[in-house]
Image (cartoon, rainbow, N blue to C red; front, top):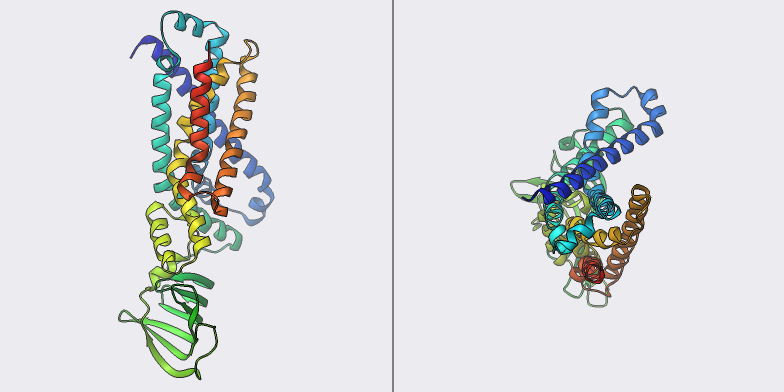
Length: 364
């Protein structure tokens, strides 16, 4: 690596790491001060607070990394421009891309790291954070294995929609059950109401079960049938119910893909479209870091040569704000159905990439 490359990369890495630590430190301090009264009132232990804030670190890293990349790039290249070092480099025959080559490689590596953290660590850490938060609010330890889920609603296979009043994973039981079955056109064909369901030997056994059948006009075909106990051909196991009730933001990519596949059997088109946008965003979002570095380079070289530090912060805020507004608009359009989910998740990246390349080509 050339001395010049090390000189530029060292500055970018130093500012990036500093930004990450400053942002995380400020978040923890602000959150501690805002909740100080509750912490003192409930006598939370130091270890509980450490676990609570450690569970926030992966998500915070994913969120602040793009802005840290942008700020470090804008400040470094703005300072080089301020000291006329960019002019000297260009005079020696180096192009902007040759000058920024190692910075772009660094941005790409950060993007890969963000992808791994967001997929492998963020769902686990967010789940742990929710458990700790509930524990702090209730003052008792919560065991997921013995947890009773209330008011569970979920889509299952074979176009089934489940409504369950109480569900226990440990006991493999559910109470207050209503199941709606639909055909491929989402017409209601059957309604099953049961007081209790128990999972034994790989089968669901329902108690006090009433079954209604409907025609194509949603009219009851015949008298409902009643049985004290009935074995149901439901493929979902208790663990499936427990996993499917998770919020999509707490799932990793594989779990989200499986969830979408299950929903696709139910025909819930709006929900599926929204989840597909979220799924494709999981792949495109991590590469915000390298895209925003490319976008920051021409803006940093167009800054005035005074007040480099404050100008870098100002330019970073403006560029970051515009980029995230554009991304939010594209995602909203995708969820409304006007754009394909894959295009909605990547359109802001495409626009930002083309804009950055155009602005770099226009630099003197």
